[in-house]
Image 1: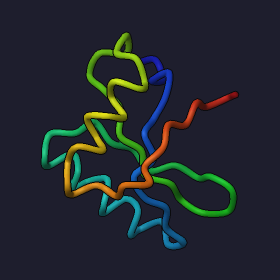
Image 2: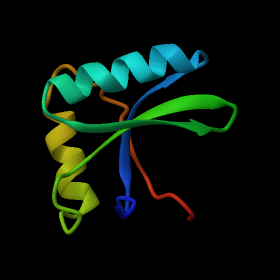
Image 3: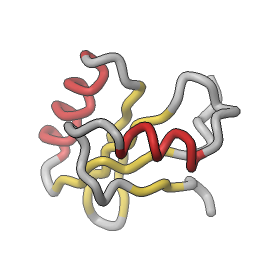
Length: 79
């Protein structure tokens, strides 16, 4: 399985278990979600089913969902 080209970061946590719980809740709602270490915290990112979807299009979709924070942002691993 290949890594998504980007994630939209929808939360950061200091406790890994909380991040993993949130990622699981998002997966239960039908989102592709993953918790991963980032800058001393644990970030939760969502990503599209189709990796060819441009990040600005997917970010707009995430931002239109009122359950996500309005400061969500696109993260490109390795960049």
